[in-house]
Amino acid sequence: MDKRENILFTDTFEVKDINKGGKVFDRVSRIDGRSQTHDMSLVLDINSELYPVDAGDRFKLTLASSLSTGDSKEQASFGKGEANWRSYINGDERSLADDYDYVMFGRVYRYDDASGSKVSAFVSFGGLLMCLEGDIRHLQNFVVGDTLYLLMKLLAKLGNGAMAGVTGVSIIFPLDMVKTRLQNQKPINGKLPYSGGIDCFRQIVRTEGVKGLYRGLVPNLAGVTPEKAIKLAVNDIMRGVLAEKAGTSIDRLPVMYGALAGATAGLCQVIATNPMEIVKIQMQVSATQQVASSGAGSQVTAMGIVRQLGLRGLYKGTACTLLRDVPFSFIFFPLQALFAQKMHQRIYGNDGKPSTLSVLAGSTVAGIVAAAAVTPADVVKTRLQSSSQPVPAYNGLVDCAKRIMKSEGPMAFFKGTVPRCLTTAPLFGIALMMYDMQQKILGW
Image 1: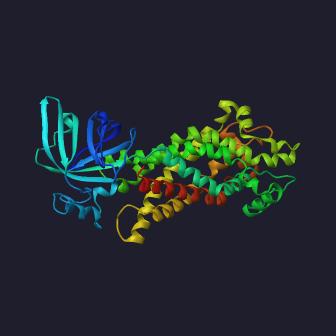
Image 2 (image 1 turned 180 degrees about the vertical axis):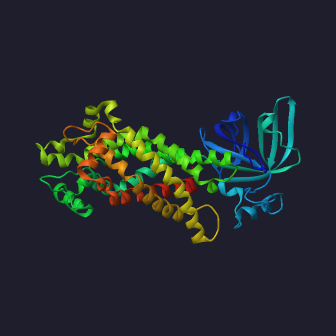
């Protein structure tokens, strides 16, 4: 339960049914839900025009005696009482409503505790009714006649992250191609094939055409759909859970909690990331092998790589992927939240929810910092997962790192840093912006 005194109840619910029994109401949906933590049952009327929901949707429901964020004693009665409550929501001062999508103000008109440990609280929101039923421990603060606020927020769907990821990857993929070629290049007759990012870009276009810049895009899009879906959704859910435990709002989550949420997201995403990355890398470097072999590089296909590697081979280099993605998310997500909020304050002069422009700018800057910090792990991962292996082949993460250091020096671990930053920063900037826009516009 939330630690703030004004929070009477909070939990996550899943919509089990809408307008049960076939009853249809004009511009009103009656939803039946079940909570995940406290096993509560809910029947709630909502304005379906303002806030449409579907069966299977998950939402966070909070019932509060005031709109105070709990950040100061002066806010103890903020938004408490019936008079002009909407002015608190629309005003410049931050309120609890800033973390939610849908708010109603109502009064407890009935409290049924006849069955002992199981009780029911009934609330009317100007004619829209709610019945919340469950263990008395979670409803003991409800008093008939008291006023309260109902706040709802639909939780992120995996489709949000998927759509955001596809958009971002499609835009920046040529830069990712350049980054991979730079990280994987090895001296030929004592000279590196590419002198830098621009030279690499020119050579790819000259020898392979513009289509060469998009080699491996299809399997990458297939992989980035679950990868970004998992990463963004898990981070969003974890931030909500940790904010609830800390007794604060999501936008004011302590940095270490934000880092923990990000690290959890990075850990979960590797399930989808590793197979996608290894197929993408082998397709991206296949054309360079064509020069040194019989020309078979142009025949390399995604399905051919999958069949050749098998399930176990698709997870080659997983330890290195974790070493890259977990620290990246640990750094990126708290910085993104911090930078987005600071930029919003600087642009708009208030502490409201960051605007879409602030999200884009904050995500891009945070992406540059995080991408640069984990480039060494990305270089080792690229070498391990490439089909172009030295003789003898690398024997794991440590062996690969030692041999790179011995033969190429410490600067080799930062090959492709600039194109990686130019790839990752806008990718996450665009992805987070699209993710934010979907939540704001579509209500997902």
